[in-house]
Structures are given as C-alpha cells and as structure tokens.
Image 1 (cartoon, helix red, strand yellow):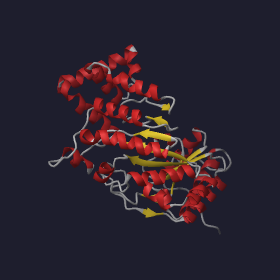
Image 2 (cartoon, one colour):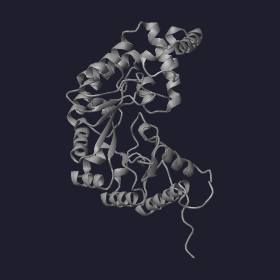
Image 3 (spheres, one colour):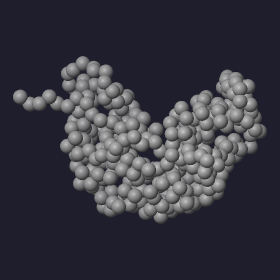
Length: 371
C-alpha cells in the first residue's frame, strides 16, 4: 500500500506586499545573517536549509490542494491555513509565486535549479516567480547561475539594500557595503532577471540623512534596478536599533515625518538617469502616492513631495494622522469632506491628550501596528 500523500506545506512569516496574492513556497527557514539591527522578522528563528526533497513534497501538496479547489480531485474543504493560502492565490489569478524565507538563493545552485524545475512542472501556469536574497549571497553567485534560474522560471529578486551609505551600513550591521550592493545588483540585471531594491528613509536619522540620501541614490544609479521600493524606518523598543536612536548612548536622532519627506525628496533629486519604477507600496511610507517611472516622472515625484512639504504645520499634522490611520494615500485625498472630518476628529483627540507636539509620537505608535 502506498503511503498517504502529504497534505500540508510550510510557509514563512513574511513576503513583500506585492506578493499578497501569490503561492508561498519555503526554501529556507529564517535568515542566515540575522544581525541587521532594524529587523526582527527572524530574530527568534534558527536558520536552516530545507532539502530539495522536502520542498518538492511541499510543491506536490500545494498542487494537490490547487487541483482539488479547481475541481480536479475529489475531497472536502478542510479549512486549513494551507488551503486558505492556495485559495487566496487562485483568487488572485494563480499566476504568481514567492520563495521564502529571507535568502532563498543561499541554497546550492543545483538545489535551487532542482526546486525550480519541479515547481515549473507542477505549476506551469505561474508566470511570475520571485524571491528575497541578500546582496552578499547574490554577489557570490555567477551570472550564469542566475541566468539558469531565470530559464527555469525565476523572474524577480527582491534585495533589501536599505542604504548605500557605508557608515550607516556598518552601524546597522547590514553585512554589506555599497560596493557589494552594486556588484550583486549588476549581476542580477546582467542575468536578465528583474531586480527590486529596497531603500529605507529615516534609517540614518538627522545625523546621516544627507549621506544616506546621496549615497543611496548613487548606488542605485549604478545598479539601475527595475524597481526602487521605499520602506520607511519604523522603530520599536524590541529592535536592537532602538538603542542607537533612543538609548543612553544614542548616536542618531529620530526624524519627523516632514524631515523624512525632505530626505525622500533629496534622494529622488539625486538619482541619475535610472530606468527604475519608484514605488511607495507600504503603509509605513508617509506618501503613499509617490509612484512613477524614472527618469520621465522625476518632476511629478518631486512635486508629490513638495505638496506635503508646502502644507502649513497643522495641515501636515492632519495628513500625518490620516495616513497613519489608513484613511488616505496622498495629500489630495484630504479634499474629500468626509475624510477630512474624520482626520480632524482624530487629530483633535490626539492634541487634546498629548498636545500638538505629541502628534509625532502618536503617529509613531500608529505605525507600529503595521510591523
């Protein structure tokens, strides 16, 4: 008698917002570096590689659930998390997948190729397959290996650059330098894969803001990735980085939303002739409508920053609380009377208990709900 087929599969804790409707396939558990002082996603997890055999069994289990949900196999709905994840992917078209956890490509290249081959065999309908990867890991791979991954279905790599300012990269224990980010990024682009690089406004505080914006723009200009995604710093007392900003020997000062918006503007202005799409696709970003195709949309992107920066202080505070409460995306959304009224009520509530000077602390507390 043949053994009972596996019914479940593993998933990791996070994925990019752009992969909210994707199949999730776990290649590794945790992060092999796990020392970045701004990140707690994998802090309590011991890193481990999964075997190709384990991953192939997960792919088969996922495919069986898909086939059953589509009516190809008999069996009742079981209400499991795995079934929900597959159903969610199907509701979004069933054409995208994301490889977890933090650094999937740390697997040996032959293992990655084996997994990709099996996934493509079982999910030939998937047209976008993406993954996180660290710059240090990608830099060790050959362009030929990366290209082979693309030939087997991998379409995009997400890299958390965070900054191109070497003193800041050292301070946050990133385990990478500006030069390493460029080397890795160029390899991905040269291999014909899409590259999504993440930049973290606010990470350098007031002290390193200028260098953070300037050097990050320089590094990304050299890489010329397909996407530049903003992920504004959100501090919390459980992060090692908290001590850097708020401890007794703090060396950085937290910026206000207006100061971070000015930093973003300086960053956009400093970018060279990249052909990247800039995306502000996370609720942590103040300006949710800051999106455009460079270099042509540079003027519009700068104007989006200027709209907020030109607001009177009270209008800025109104927009801040509305954005952090999830009411608006861009400044223009406050023109809706109902939205403005709700924002005014929330602002009045905050000012009544904390005063106008307490708005920054209040919006930081609101931001922490999303991490």
